[in-house]
Structures are given as structure tokens and as C-alpha cells.
Image (cartoon, rainbow, N blue to C red; front, side, top):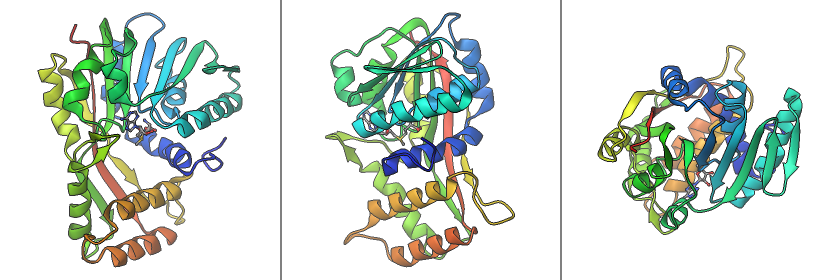
Length: 298
Ligand SMILES: C[S@@+](CC[C@H](N)C(=O)[O-])C[C@H]1O[C@@H](n2cnc3c(N)ncnc32)[C@H](O)[C@@H]1O
């Protein structure tokens, strides 16, 4: 399943996001993670794992090889697509893949698919210990102060965390548009009021606040750095890979979040202008995000 053929539209968005994240992930923070990883085939838990593109990336980048990797997500459609996406990725790479009742084996890595809502999963104690905790583009859509302590408690005493691509307060579109401040201000404010699965779900400054929350939890970051998304077309006006779809999904997210009686003035014109620029290869998008890596508090 290529980025263009993922069966669910959100799966296609996550597949398209892969190349954007590849560029964005902070390499010095990743280097620190390599130093922090215990010297054994790791037991990895990735929360809000979506399609599982991080598994492919970490195998490609030789951060992990053998071991066990659990993909936890609340959305069963993404996990269903994940098995097919990872199998197709492995096949294209010449890596033996075997479908399992609860996941897929990729070479020496056993990948397990777990459908669970994070808050409920942690309330029942979770299933530790794990050697590596990963959250990519997730800690800005959950309530970090309540989630973090039970999440970190799943780590083995020498385990590590790698929390990446956490949104931190700024979205930028180019060229400038007169409605930018009204639209993006309303969009960012909506993040502070978000409720999902009956729980508070994130905030606009999640990235910077995560550093303080980790200190309070006794697990201060050993490394931190930015992982901003930067998306633009090449000189020929075409976006790389499936990144035009990625941008359309970002515009749709803003539209869905803000549409309704309280929509900011100028939203419809702003969206029309951005879609016109996207079609012409003129739209540039940046989002400010942060990565951190550190050790278990225990
Ligand atoms: C922005 S996506 C990121 C997916 C993946 N980590 C990636 O970067 O490609 C956020 C993911 O978190 C999942 N998610 C959001 N809230 C969740 C919750 N409370 N419990 C479990 N998963 C959740 C969503 O279903 C979605 O797959």
C-alpha cells in the first residue's frame, strides 16, 4: 500500500506525512535516543501510533532491528491499514514479512497492533515494562499532565522515551493573507478547548509545556530540539511525494475545526485562496514543533 493507495483517507494523510516527518525529526535528539537505548532487543510501546510509519522509519534508520513493537491507537481503521501498509513497505524493501493474528512480523521485529484509548489503557495499569516509549505528533492531542505519570511508569528502570513532533504554538502559511491572524488565531485557540473521547485533548503550546511536565514527573529531557514541518513545492511547482495531499488535509482540519456559526471572519475566502495556491504549487506551510528524549524516572 503506497502513500497514494491507503484505504482510509486519514491513513493516506499519515502515509503522506511520513516524508514531512522524515525531514522534521530533530537529529541531535535522535542521536541522544540512540545513546539512551538499553543494549538489548527493545520492547517498544508507541502510543497514538496511527498507521505505524514510525516502525518503518526506525528500521530504515537502524535505530531498532529485532525486538517487540506495540502500536497502540484508538482508531481500529488505522491499525487495520497498518498491517497492509507495513507488509507492503517490507516487501518493497526485501524484508521478510509475516502476517500474525495480532500484527505482523518484520524480519526480527514482532509488531503488535493494540486498539485502545490511551486514558482508559493507562487507568487499567497498562502492560509494562517497556524499554522505549514513543509518541509522535500525539502529545498535543492528549491531556499531558494526567497521561504522563502513568505512561512513564510503564518504562523499565533503564528505559528511554522519545516524544516527537509535539505542536508548539505556531502555524505559518505563505504568501501572507489578510485573514491569517483571524483564522490561525481561532484555530490555535480551538486546540485549548478540544475534548476527545470524553477527556481534555491537548493545547496549542503542548511542546514547550511538555519540558516542565517531564521535569515534574522526575524525567527531565536529556535532549530537546525543534522538529518544524516545512512544506513547499519544488522549482517545477510540484510537491514531493504525496505532500500536496498532506497540505489539503491540513486545510481540511482547519476548515472542520472552525466551520460553523462562530467561524472567524474571512475563513471561506482564506480557504479558497490557500487551495488556489496549493493547486498552483505556491502554498508554503510551516508548523513549529518540538522533540525531546530522556530516561525513565525510575
Ligand atoms: C496526528 S496522529 C499521529 C499518528 C502517528 N503517530 C504518526 O505520526 O503518523 C494522532 C494519532 O493519535 C491517535 N489518538 C488520539 N487520541 C488518542 C487517544 N486518546 N488514545 C489513543 N490514540 C489516540 C489518533 O487515532 C491518531 O492515530
